[in-house]
Image (cartoon, rainbow, N blue to C red):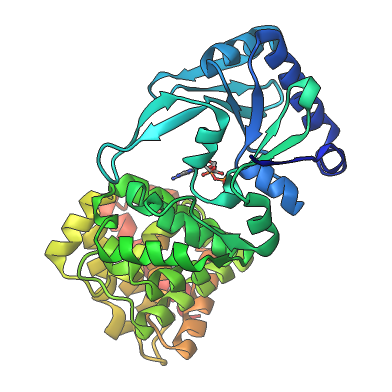
Length: 407
Ligand code: ATP
């Protein structure tokens, strides 16, 4: 027994004609090819919430790769198969991308490892998903177009704003779902169901996050910080003690929280007022500089390797720590700030800003602004013509910069 609703009217109202026509066409191809076709997951959730989502995931009961190939041949578009996962992607001429999977059940042989995949039906496919709000499907074949499949009370959870795992071992099987729960909770301002929170907490306490590869954890952490107010997600990670399970011997304290808040605020300020300092920065690295500043060097090296951080990550972190005390003087001259920070990249600059007093941060901001607008009377080429050689040029340019900064 399950609930079905026909949501064709909602689809007509919320989905652009172009996407709606494409979904209809995919359903028609499904019937031609002889397979049931569904759109699933985040797209369905967002449709019911009235939020636009251009990430379309299809599931077919049958061979997803062969169906994908069939569609690509009909439409004469690019087809890419991901053999190992039994999925494929289609690339439309206007840049639109579609993922197609075979309905499947996943068997976890060992907790936190990637699962073995078996062919299955749509219901089982939906059951292995992370949360009820992400476990609905809409049928696309013409005879049933717009039929919403809700096997697990998903729509009710969505209406009530509840994040619910579909079974008690969900987090043990895939601990990254702990981070996903927090992301969706913050994004939609939903509540994690009481039992679900209980399963989560037990999975955290029993060190299951430690079994997941750094790459998979990093992907989910990066998604949390891409959300609108990343600080809320981070606070939640702290409150649930997840920080210590992601980064050994690292503790979430009020001081740290305060520094993370300052870091995000400074990041947002630069992003709004002086984008030059945001270009090519990696927000994940900046966050880790702040979180890991109190962690010892040998542990840092383990964390660096685990999360695939650059070789010089620890060195760059230490270089910033070495100037904390030197820079925190309110009467410091711009030329002195320049001397202390001239080798820093933008990630280090933003980390440093989280460590200085509010008054000093204003001063530091003015310094950055002046530095980014500076016009020197001579450039490197001029100096070369005047007979300066390689490192002399650098030294001279530094001198000129400092003079301009203090003007
Ligand atoms: P977003 O709006 O952030 O893209 P999404 O729900 O589309 O959210 P994706 O990470 O793109 O998130 O995943 C697509 C769908 O795949 C999800 O809706 C969910 O059904 C399923 N899914 C993704 N990751 C997991 C996971 N770790 N465990 C179970 N199901 C997952």
